[in-house]
Length: 204
Image (tube, rainbow, N blue to C red; front, side):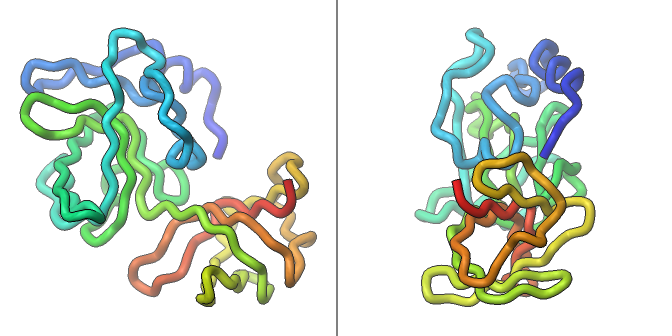
């Protein structure tokens, strides 16, 4: 997912302040990348040396109270994720807080606040990263085998891209073949347990 270079510069340079325990909320990208790959990247030092170690959370959203997401973690923990006007939100593509729903899964990266919340610099909603075998191809969807399960992936106009043998991203999926091993990056649909495809990577 591409972003305007000037926008990246602005986000890194300028911080956003918010009245949360008197603390300064970091601007989006201050803790690392914002694209979908960044959700699965190894932790990296903050880009701004004034910011402490990044905090991470994952789980299912159980309640939304204003700009705070209540999240049940996979191991019984509970997180409170504070969204700010500097939070980057990804749900198949960069989006806004209005797209986040109860029942969605998320990964969140941010800074621990004195009140126990995590002030989020980036939130990835329903993001999945699967290694699959392609089992079927249709005009608007691909069928995969993953861990003994069949998975349907929806091709989304003006969003789904492919990369072949490490090449540049393209909207041309014509080189995808049945039987190929592929990596699928996309957004899970809780309502029907399918995936909207952001990117298909075939070969390395």
